[in-house]
Length: 328
Image 1 (tube, rainbow, N blue to C red):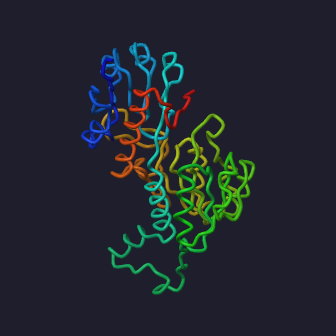
Image 2 (image 1 turned 30 degrees about the vertical axis):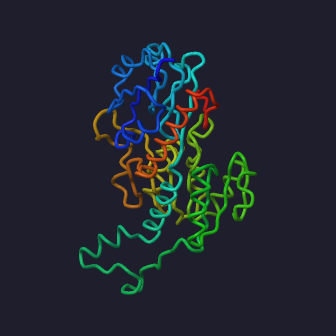
Image 3 (image 1 turned 45 degrees about the horizontal axis):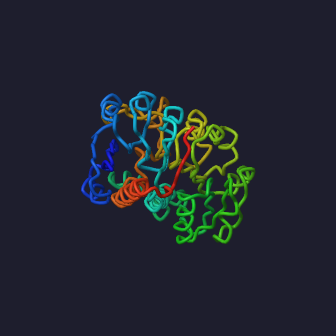
């Protein structure tokens, strides 16, 4: 039997190259691409059994004459063109980012609710911006006693809740599969028809669901209006879950307390520079903006490398894959 041939075009796997190659079946031939260059990858796909990367295009599908598996190096597979997959080619994803993202949600929620960035900035100017020294200054809230509303209760949502619960928060959730959250200590769980109630009750709303046609702009003007005026919106899933114009207006007019946004509407296509949105979110002082890094830790990608390598070994052995997905 010929050795497996694997093409990898995931920059986040490169720091773990030695680990990846050590985990693959003996004799596997690996081609590494440091960046996603569609033409270079397409030229390398003839004769390949497996492709690992965030995107799969029609040009790549046309070049793949022996492909058996497309493996995403993360959870999201919206970059895979399902129509471009040759007949019979399997597709799978991986996770391992749940703990890192939950840490991010907890940390940024504390930063925003306690206004730590503002406190740091003011103290550098010699201004003690605290209710202890300024009687008109409002006291700030902790996570203990806050109500956290989790929209989407899968791998990420469940980990977010476990960590927030440890801080003393109470929780509510809406999910397409409410039974998954039973016995988790939440105040209540509902189907997606419970979203309005969740928004009205929550001090922190965390979006933990995939981007699908039916979830695009799930959070719009009406939903933002339903939130508490001091509530925090945290998006660690996909930018277009939230209508950007509605979010910008709500923040600018201070109709909600603030937002933590890690996922965006525009991404770099080459290099590391691009505005994350057409709207000037960077001019607002009640938003914490990060470049899609909530799950980007060493621990996340070490786990993903092991997961992907194990699935490739299953493919070689004729065993069922873990985490199979069906891109549209």
